[in-house]
Image 1 (spheres, rainbow, N blue to C red):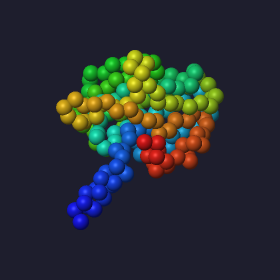
Image 2: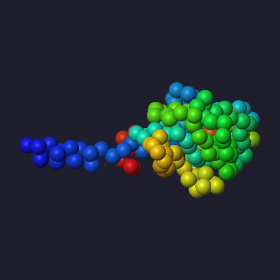
Image 3: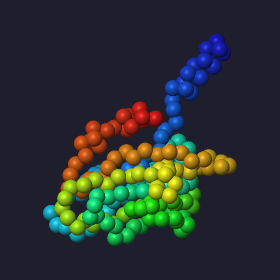
Length: 178
């Protein structure tokens, strides 16, 4: 009987992989839309960059947010737990490398990035690897070394357009990638 329980425990442990780390971009803190529509150039809008840190939590993050040509950031606001020791910027090259003042083990927003566009041409914002490190991911909370873990982008942020792949995506589909 104990052999059956041990075998079942091993099968269960293998069948349930660790949750992956996911960056996402949203127009609001409630994560209700990843689109911004306007009929006026130079209208300010905010892109919130969120992180789902996965099962090991996160103690830092590194990535680069890019936007379409003619788009630019007018500034950003970090989440309260972002350390003052930052390298780079959350928008554009080379990207951001940010430590956290405490372990984050739930989905949180990292930066609220204020943006503008010089035209009404449709385009998409993306999360990519930091130029300096070629890394897009997190430092986990696992002691003692806080190992790095790659992160995926859940969606794109759309300016005057939609991203049909985001609408068709589900967390179940994203988890299958891991």
